[in-house]
Image (cartoon, rainbow, N blue to C red; front, top):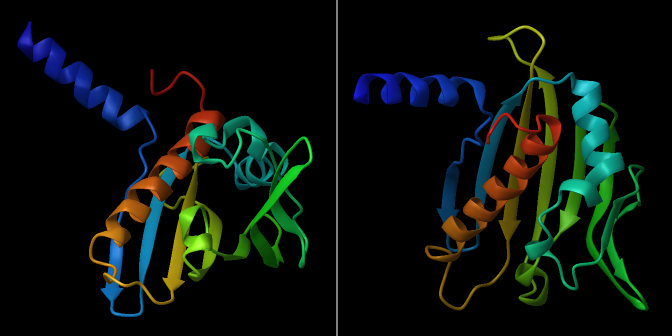
Length: 178
């Protein structure tokens, strides 16, 4: 029975998209985190899930008011959250190469209030390893002043970025991680 359970677990690992987290670097003035996942969807489907359906998959426990999320995928556009008369610009869109790269700048979540700033890249590419799949890379390069440095903060941001990317992967492949 253990052998069957082990084989089933390995099988699930190969089928389920799992965000690959990575803390690239940590310095006195900032850090870089990169997360990647490969999904059974085209780059076009993945792009539209990000830009057109963000409110359907973005984790609501990573919001200011459990509001409605939107991304205006044009330079100067907004990754925004609204609820009633409240609104927040989570990030500003600064670069759009449709179906390839969406770059936003700003500080997500508490980083915004801490005065930290960063560039967040969403990149979409056909996977070279598995035909018909897309590798989505989420890279966040953050800088600014932190009283206690970034040794403790950077891994937390890396973890949260992994959760957000995994939420997009789960949206694109419902039921595959259940």
